[in-house]
Image (tube, rainbow, N blue to C red; front, side, top):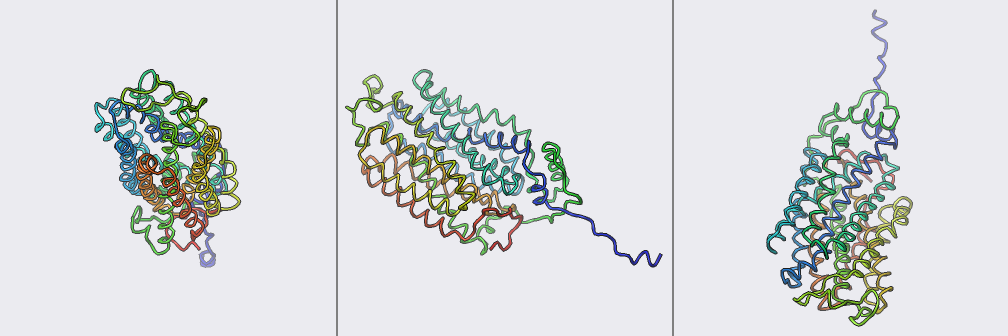
Length: 477
């Protein structure tokens, strides 16, 4: 017996969630996850793009000035900015799935109420509440990021842009049919349908296993991992799941930890600039179409830019003509034009260099909008510009979700999104007010901001290409 007791006991095999996610590979679970979580982009795009396609009708109905139209968009992003940080904190504390579900219920409810707005003030207030709900949709990307194996993140996450594109095209197509016939109120009601459908679909998606282990719910994480193994027809790693519990989750001061301080500040600058440029080009496109500001699209030009007296309202404002919806549709398709190159850049050049290149190209194409050209030339510039600004958003979303550890990932993305919405709040006053006073001045301002973001992207201290997701704060160089 003495000899027996002196023999070493074999160590029990253990594994981490990171190792389990990699071992389970990519399969049917991830396809379902991609379809449902990706579809959150459809709902978000329809709610965000809604203002751009209804603003001419609302301007005419309530006889609004430029600053009042700009304020509608600004207040949507104000609601997004305020609640984005709150939702990010709650997601790190109480779970990604719960926050995602609550945000969709909130957004769908207030979106439906918007369609019954009796006045401009009520419309602005209710769209602000919608902005609060939409800010929680980013948790869909977090859940995708935390379930995907490392080598698939650089491919699958950018493909989620297809859903945003689908939502953008859908709202433009619906607007071209519904606005002239049923009115903008019905367009708002129809736009809320995807969000309502997704609320029912969320039951097929579990809580993030990475989040569960970070808060000590190993049983919940194991149940999820076994379910994924069954769906993917793969095998769980042998041994016991071992992960230490992290009590410090969702703390704002961790974003300013010396290990992440520089990264956080530069990410905030980039988010602010990208949102400023992205929503700027959407609103600039609408202004170019509504008021014929581009030198190649005078009122007397025949073709796509032609307007008839029938589509002018009694209050001397301009409703979108069918040709204007066509141009918006074509330029929006441009969001996929750069996507294949963006995916290659993200995976082969890395996140930082890819973002630097697309931000620089965005600046160039903003300046090209000032070149006197035909309608075809204008459409081409808008087409490529939309492609580059979309690529910027693709890359910064991925980078932000990858660079922060699980204990502060949702807060990091939420805070960055919140700072970005400051840029989105400013964009309407540049694209809808300054643009009417100084066309070149507005374009130069957009270009300058993009150049600053390109410099900030190039000097980011961390590259996340092929880097495993971190569980907690640690040295990352």
